[in-house]
Length: 253
Ligand SMILES: Nc1ncnc2c1ncn2[C@@H]1O[C@H](COP(=O)(O)OP(=O)(O)OP(=O)(O)O)[C@@H](O)[C@H]1O
Ligand SMILES: [Mg+2]
Image (cartoon, rainbow, N blue to C red; front, top):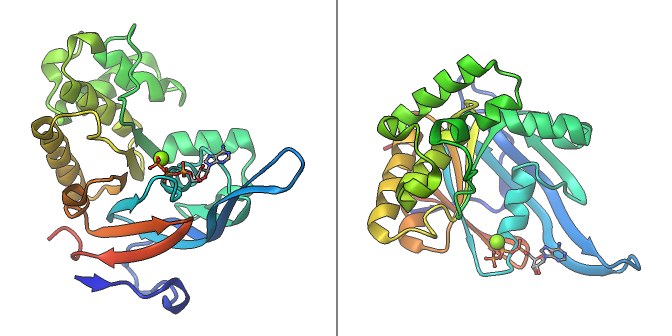
C-alpha cells in the first residue's frame, strides 16, 4: 500500500501519449453553504484537489458530514462549486449553462443510488431506456440498447417485469443497466450496496469489478472498509478536506 503525495506535491499530469487522461479533475474546489443573510453556514468542501484518471476505481470514505455527498454532487454535476474549477472529461463545468451542464451530465455520467430509484410504473426494459429518451434516441433503438445492457447485468429474462416484482439485488442490477445505457465515461455510486444483504451486495460488487476490468471509471461512496479495499484507491474526507488518498493497487491487477 502506498500513500499518494499531498496535493501540493502532486506532479503535473503526465504528457506521455496513451497515459490515462483525467475523467474528473477538481482544482481547489470549495463548497460553502451560506445563510440567507450572506454569512457562512458550513464549509462543506475546502479547496479540494482531486484527479481521477480514466479507468480508475475509487472509493470515497469519511465520517458522516465530512463532505462525501457534497463531493459526489459536484463530481456528478448535480451541484456547482462555490470556488475552484471542475473539469469533467476535460470540459470546465463552470463554463456550461445549467441546461448545457444537465445535458452534458446525461451523456457523461451514470448514477447508481442506494435506493435504486427505479420508476415503479415502467417495466425493467423501459426503466433502463429512460436516460436515452432524454438524448432523443428513437424508441426502437432505446429499447434495443436497454436490452443489451440488461443482458450485461444478466437480467434478460426479466425485461417485462415491474421493479416491485424483482429482488433488491435485481433492482440494483436494473439501476446499473440504466446507468450504463448512455455509455457514460464514469459510473458514480453512492452506497450502492447499502440497502442489500451481504450476499446480494457481493454480487453487485462483482459486477462493478467486472465493469472496471472492462475499463469503466468508477467512483463509489462507501462506509464499509472491506468494500473500499476492493477498489484501487481510497480517498478519505475529513471536515471538507482530503484527509488521506491511498493507492491500493495498480490498474486492473
Ligand atoms: N444544503 C445544505 N445546506 C447547508 N449545509 C449543508 C447542506 N448540505 C450539506 N450541508 C452540510 O455540509 C456538510 C457535508 O455534508 P455531506 O452531506 O456532504 O456529508 P456526508 O459526508 O455525505 O455525510 P453522510 O455520511 O451523513 O451522508 C455537513 O456539515 C452538512 O451539514
Ligand atoms: Mg452523504
